[in-house]
Amino acid sequence: MEKPKSTDVAVPSPLSIPLDIDPVNDSYVIKGGAGVAVAHVKKPSGEVFSVHVRANGALRQMTQFDPSKVTVDERRALEMDLYAKGHTQSDIADLVGVKQPTVAHDLKLMRSRAKSS
Image 1: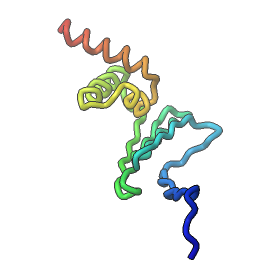
Image 2: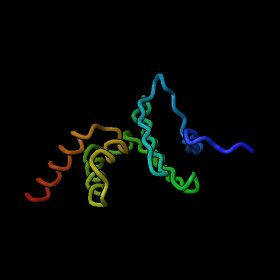
Image 3: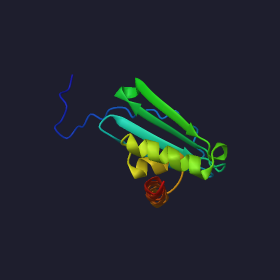
């Protein structure tokens, strides 16, 4: 057996992302590093499908968010809850299918409402 050259690099197989992505019609973000892969797929209907894959696929956490089933105020309350649980504004934006500045605005609005009541 031939000894590997110092320039040979062993590349682990990529993690599988179990989501249906239509590259023409969907908008999507795929991030990864340190054994973790995260994908968010926003369908034309506004639905967002997210998956977090860890430990070589042994742990998969999947979520689905359908904005047609909540009011804007309910979405804002969800954003506040996720933020209170330690999610970043960018993560929340990916999960609910809005832009990060929208989440920042919503959080500010919800805080000011809480102060005035």
